[in-house]
Image: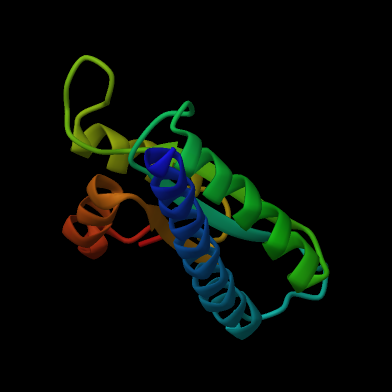
Length: 137
């Protein structure tokens, strides 16, 4: 019985931490999106979301889903979130340079994304490593 209470407390703490992290991510994203220049044709804002894992991780899936919903609600206009899984090379992931080339090709004939964010440690390391190869440059 005691183990169930401890498990419920840990789950509650994890959910609280997830909600806090989501709130900070949404707030930061809104500040960046709001600061981006507005075009006369009002093209949807673009968010390039670098992810460390494919779908199937319950915590990351919940975070990403909640992030998308809250950004759409708070921005008040269309926001296009483009997911891209990056990380260490192997049988599942593409080599880093191939991922950089693919991201560049996505934005070759359009404006760069208004926001580039990472979800997870390997995606953050990828973003930091390839910051010099910014999209649209």
